[in-house]
Length: 280
Image 1: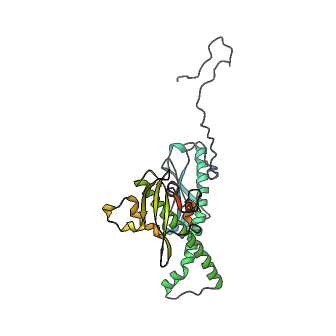
Image 2 (image 1 turned 180 degrees about the horizontal axis):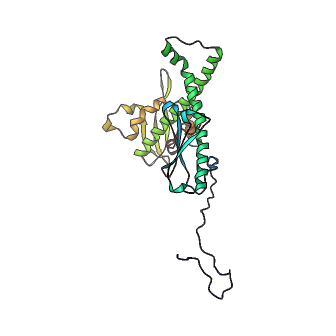
Image 3 (image 1 turned 180 degrees about the vertical axis):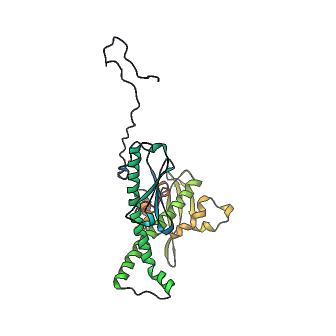
């Protein structure tokens, strides 16, 4: 076996028989880890996490490293008091202690996902209860005052989230389409029109980072022939579904910092395009 240990030259009484040997130090990150990664071994790359809902509504959490699954975690028969997992062979997890710590983190993360997801399922089932029972039995169920109050609360929360997500997802689609076709675009100014049933967002003016006009985009452009359209116009009809009043609109969260009153209608395209629905 070859000995690669660096020896001190004979007659030089510094450091004894062996000199200091160069070795790689672990990389030091100055960026603090997210609290959600507490317990995940620091020697491993950051994990990628996703979940799926399968037969019998069993929730399965998949933890991957660099795109390769390393753990699948689930509750057998959706029993919340028991957890099973499958471990996949992976070079990163050959050390038993690292494997055990990563698996423990995967179990805890599965719980963090499964509990609120089950609550979402329960709320959806409660909102649909009267409709489902009526369809199954031919009779509308009797609802107490407490039942009705709960239904009001559940539907208000669901309506708020649906309106928020629909509005912000619409703006994200518009922004991505514009940026794909106009990479120099920086922001848009929403245009508002009036109709018999009130005001509505009818389109936008597209600007570059210096505030120079690039082009305009109207919900009416969705009726153009395909060969007359550019990428953004395919989704122009989404404007008409947006809240027209910025003081009530969720898209106002995507505003460029306000300097003038009209800036309340100005949307940062990069910020809008990056929306994912993760924020409450």
